[in-house]
Length: 443
Image 1 (cartoon, rainbow, N blue to C red):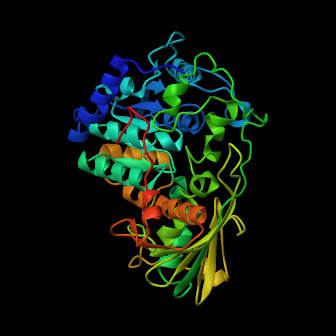
Image 2 (cartoon, rainbow, N blue to C red):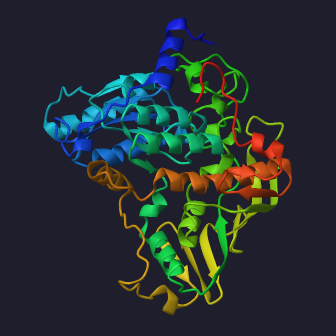
Image 3 (cartoon, one colour):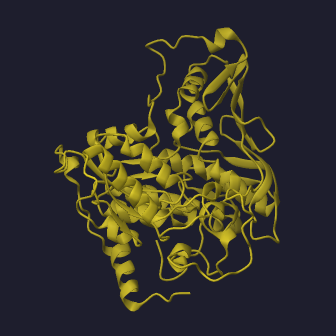
């Protein structure tokens, strides 16, 4: 493994501890010199590249930089090729076609995200990294005056999430979490019907999430140690996570099945369906008071050690129970005294046509309307208003998933104080709300 040099350590420490707050011109109601929102993308192997393609379609956006610790390789979704160089080619080729300049090459590519974040000509960034790398770049980007589109799940731990919230609020940044189901009309419609009492008094909410640890590469990547591929800064990829030998099954798309870097399907989908459940319940800025009936099956002797089967219940102060399990029907089902409503991506159903076709009146609760998650973020970068999936809401939603994982790993119920964000009378559980950081990285 590459050792971190004294110069690299100094650079890390300087950026983490003492980055200046650089405010983009858009904050003052004046567009960037190009009359567009300039963006950089940190993490362009999987979702980051897909999102980048989406932002490229917005004429108000100019993509000027990409960043990834991997130069170029396969091993991503369906064994696709990804990394900073393929992403840079996508951007340059897009603008070459758009401008008619075949030699367009203005998009820069970086290995180190510090170099991208400290560019004064960048207004906003997207971070689409493994979960263990979510907190530090977001905090540093906020300190550097960048607005942030951060992919879900928001954080690896409750402590990371709260630190991210504090930084975004302290530096008055716009943050959109990539929980794009909030920009799906079907989820918004279902939540509005629930919030306006169409199913009577809400009693239970069921969230069906996927199970297992599927190989998203599709090549059965090796779990045995191998030499680090050329062009891949594996030590930087590990970052604050524990030191571990390189193997293909550890990195890129399948990182999410390893507890050192993620929380498995529970957190991978915890930023989606439980988030919409909180939206419909009206509990977006709080959380449950108990986690009960937690049962999970973990592959403890395997590199991929996240839960393959799971179920747990989150109990709220008003008695509503949120059930989360891979055994439930996919999507979110709200069950009340007078009926039920179910929603999934692109569809929703109700226990009666009367409920499903009910009209929401102008004096009733109207939830935040967004029909395009990317455009909503850019709208808010320009207007300085809060987006549809702000960071505090995202933090509260993913906290449920983190607590579920903790309860399953410990094999016991938890009493949760959502105001103090502490487990009541359980020292061991509270230690699991955070993770130690490998030196020299720290919050």
